[in-house]
Length: 317
Image (cartoon, rainbow, N blue to C red; front, side):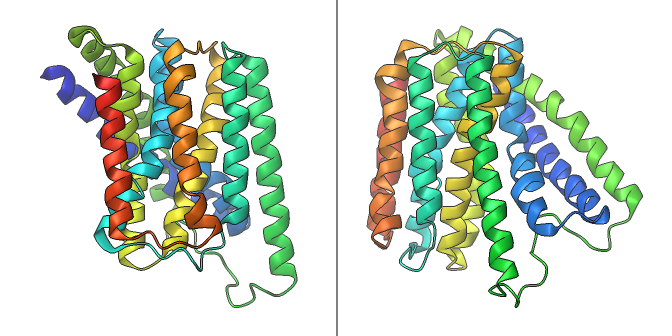
């Protein structure tokens, strides 16, 4: 029971510290004159992925790389089946007016690239640089497209982007407090969660991979779940889809890319035979909703959630 409490405590610290770091970093960037658009594409994106990144790095350093791989692959599967399934059950998601086709295709390409690298495994720093180069190309293209969009006057109604965590009136002392809490809390929370998760795995005779795919993956998907539930209630399907697609791309390219620079990540056979294909299959399930504008009804929400529960039962059993 103590290990579960420590894992829960580590997760809570991670989530709070990640939010604190985002708030601090966003306001430092804006105070220094960095455009809000670029802050959204870089600082916020990396900041919200900081918990997963710290978990990955801690897991590799503590010789539990299965948690690092399991967290990324499990989170991506959970993001689609659970994080979209539950909001769809709550109120449904109308995706016919969403403009996420390009991002969705890029996510699929990133998934295929990642799976290809896994079959070349173990994942080394060379593979990590390939993943990070792909991420840089994506961010560069997004930045170019967004700036061109604004330059053409299509975004004139929104002079300044609304950025998560931005507070124009926040004072420097408060900004520094957010930064310090984030920088201290992230490694502390990651260390607690990885240690406790490894202990739980050893106690129950399961692999650290299974713990990464279940306990850690679901835990680190909670912020995305909260965001998509609120987006569904506000009838903002584009926010829900964009959040999931963006998170999945960052998990594959940034988290594993940076983690592999710290240490080599072995790819277990279970990933090659099941988990990677479930992740890709879940991603393909989004196709009709993104490309054809199908409405994600409550029935579809139940189906997606049930598929995730079945997947959990399969890997645990």
